[in-house]
Length: 321
Image 1 (cartoon, rainbow, N blue to C red):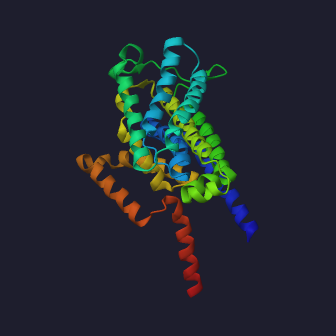
Image 2: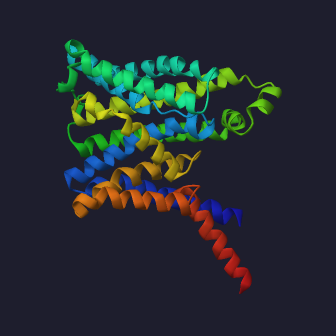
Image 3: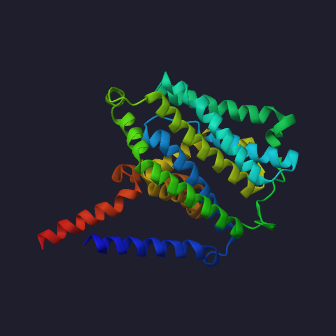
């Protein structure tokens, strides 16, 4: 039985890899390809948010601000200095480390709604700073002419080419996230969420773990922002409003809190579904909100829980027969 499950898992992973590799050939529409690329970037950001909000239970509503700093770090470095986007990606990682430390320390003293308000304030301060510091950031006009990535002289100047780079990076970060969640660190993150007093009594350094979770979330968020700026070639501070942070929370909750696969599914659903519903014109956002509400009521553990429910239903039916 275990061997069959092992072979089935290998088969499904192989099939998924083949589908992802040929996806740009199947989808020739440039707009749909852009949506797929945006889905991969959103998945990276949500995987980061999962560390702090999903695993440790610390409410982070400042993802939009983290995302913005990663995007502007990439945009300003490459456009003002002419340096490679790869150095911009490295800068985004450094920014994530600094932001994570900066946001992590307030979480040692506050939690719940107060931490949520603090992170909301952080995101809003970032947006206002980017808007009003027009001499450096371009203000409301934004930053244009952000260069594309280049690998050994081969420029990723189309959405199809950029897709494969995003796919590789998303896979690497997903595997990393999966290993962290399955490791002792993941269990420690979960213990802080479930019972911080018991975790501390067992010798867990809660302060260190909270800062680590915020740092991981910020690094992933900044990487996502940097990749977004190169995808679009243009960014503006108006993009990074509070709605963005809320959307990332929705992606995590709908996909499945604490699950890497759920993070990816949630990112895909919330990124692509509104675009598909735009045929309904003025009613599309109302229908989307109703669908999200239905998902929240009937699938409180997210999309990732659906296969398990189907298997349990099938087994119960089999026993009755």
